[in-house]
Length: 123
Image (cartoon, rainbow, N blue to C red; front, side, top):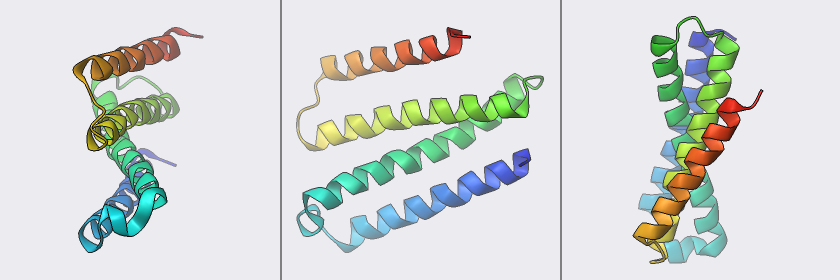
């Protein structure tokens, strides 16, 4: 799949997830969907954010590193999208539970940076 097909496919998935999340958010309450529904909502949020961020990282990577093969660009953008999307989703989840502190956000951010550093430097 070429760059246009990749961006179109991921954009379609991200838009569908975003539309579903917004529909759930405006049509019901957290009490109405229950704990399992809220859990799936946050998983959908993570997937949607990861998809949107992957597109951004892919387009940015093509501008900053045009000589990098397209397959490597896709792998890098997916990885970074999942890491950053997961980080934001976890922060929002902890915040909604009133369990988020500055130290927690900092430690989680450092963990994400270490994981990214490890994945980039390994052969």
